[in-house]
Amino acid sequence: MFEINGFDTAGVVSLKRPTLAAALKKARELVQDGCWDVQVVDPAGRIYTSFEEQAA
Image 1: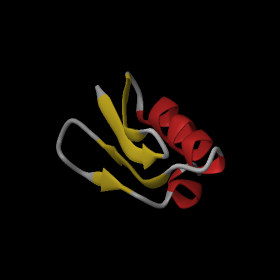
Image 2: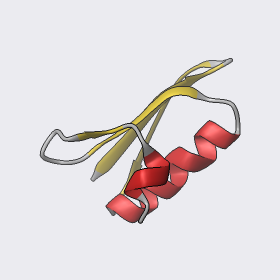
Image 3: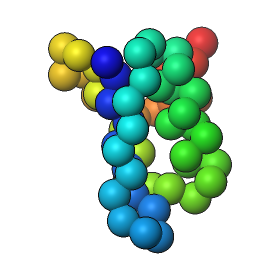
Image 4: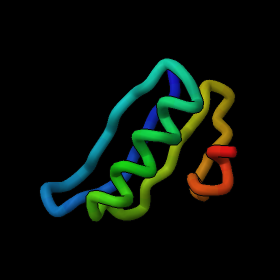
């Protein structure tokens, strides 16, 4: 599972998605909705923070 973590005005946002594509899509949505410090962590521990570049 891929974890999506970030912050919004209510506090911590922590979600999971089964694929990298789905996780990156959700991360972009969170950023567009005003969340900050959003990152995706893959099962190997790699951290993605630049979602527009990773989506290609």
